[in-house]
Image 1 (cartoon, helix red, strand yellow):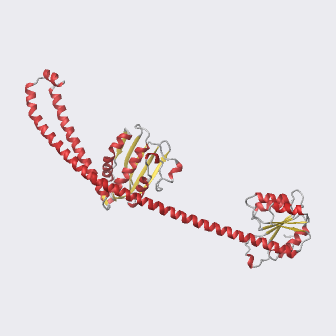
Image 2 (cartoon, one colour; image 1 turned 120 degrees about the vertical axis):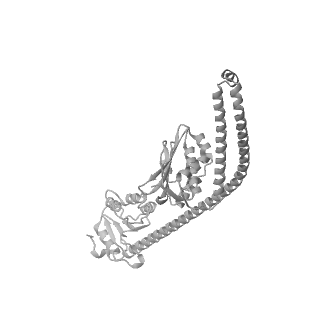
Image 3 (tube, rainbow, N blue to C red; image 1 turned 135 degrees about the horizontal axis):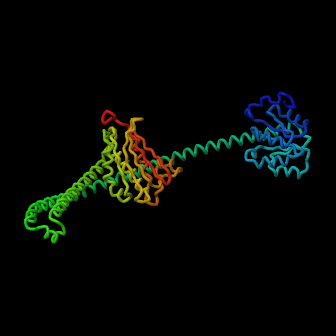
Length: 438
């Protein structure tokens, strides 16, 4: 209950635009002064009071700060100067206008009040209309200042949002430029691979013809060796018995044929890979195990260089409907990342396919025992151009592009990692049950 009239909380004029929690705080240890000031302001403002500086600070701390404070100087325990100083040191209350209302009328007292941050100084006895006018003016100034600060804050937020949009557009433009450059490089590389493949095929055919001719001649030489060279002479000429020598020769021809066949397979895979780079990718029903086999053909040298412990585990899985070459590109990117994550050849990489029956998906898991991904970087791995390998030429485009390609094929790419222990990349693709097993 207020010590002045109950209608002290009556509505203020609309031009003051008072909020429900807005009020003026009177701080004075004299009840008569509180009553006079309260009755002076009650028609325009909601008024609250405190009978000491300590009570005033506690009230402000526990509730919404006032719009303005009328503050007496001469109070016990804590005078008005100390109260004002405490208010101005607190970031939450330093902008509250303070008007000193006091019997101390010396210039040095007024100077000290303004020096502490007061906006006005009223001496007792005071004219009620002048006090009301001063309070009205300072409250209006505070509200206008608050409105201006809110308006500036709103403009700053809009500018910040616009800057983010521009940054995103710039990143997307940069990404498209990189993708275009990448496509152009792949196209040029594809043409070069086609030319080199042609030359390699000619050389391979020459090796095959020579090997076949040599094998034919060897078949004619074998009877002569068997007739004219006994085991004792064989030890002298061949450092081994005749039969062992014949078996080793036959194995050498087999190794030549197998190597030539392997070269032809790699050349054809490379030609097909770079040919598809320039094509519009169509979705087809594919066996993910075959895609992995094809991808690992390209990666064999990198894998051998990175680890002596590489394992592939194929599970019988349903077909998936996706673009063959796009999935192949994702697998190449992720296995390359796994190779780069290893710190030594003793660490392992495993590629595994699984049928995930709980959600009818086919999973491709690429697990490495490398350095792992720090927790603070896990949320950034799909960001454009995020990489921790800038010193080794990393661009950050591999995982981002892989994520887009997997999403394009209605799948999901996810990572789990423990720093210092390794990472598991998981590609999940919808299974097409009617086209495959299961």
